Image (cartoon, rainbow, N blue to C red; front, side, top):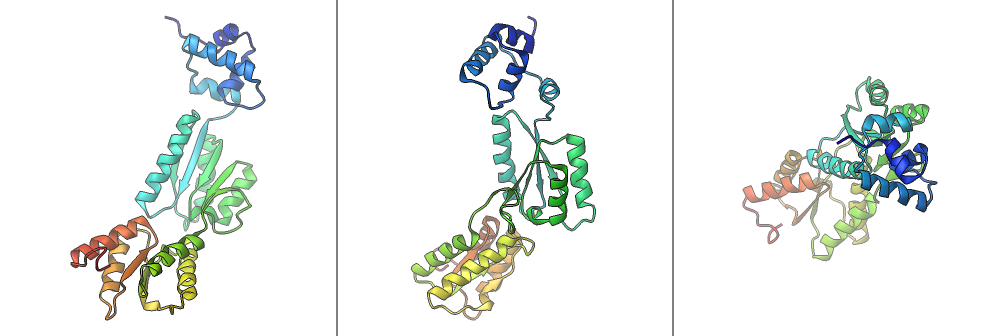
Length: 271
């Protein structure tokens, strides 16, 4: 059986090839009536456009780049899963590009990715989101950008973020409401604005409750399991150990739980 072409869809739907292309590419400014005719013709003919044909017709690659420099496999795995799912729903492809924000070749690497893959847009995750030279290069190229959890200049691009200060305040306030006064805190990686924001929220909640800040209860983490384990071991070894520990990422929290279990500290009865 001969495979249906876009010309066949155009003929059956009674519309131009350009209109078929607009519907297939999910463009706006197509009437509901025209869209319905094309979709019915596509279903009737069992038409499946090739990626090459879509790219040629719309002068687009239908590819989105996801750029990351993240020490947490769990975080980036979930980020890729979410972006990938949305790309599949929209018939786009996701291209994942790890990078090093401290590399002098970062901007060149991003530029090469855009040129080679002809990306239609880029999603930047922290800490890449706040690298000024990388943003400047994307602005120069006029490529659409969405930043995840930017720490500065939230209006510079489209962005997806939460209020880290308020979230950490809420978490700490909850522990205080349970009666805890000595609350350990495991900070995140120093390259991330969110790390400082979460520490601010922690201190803010303590101050509001009249609890003095104790630097001995704050341990530096790296957003990974190992640093969570190290933090718990150090905090629980204090002469006056905390009765609760707030780890500012899931990976570090898992490390805290593992250390507590190994040390024979019952959770949540003792911690």
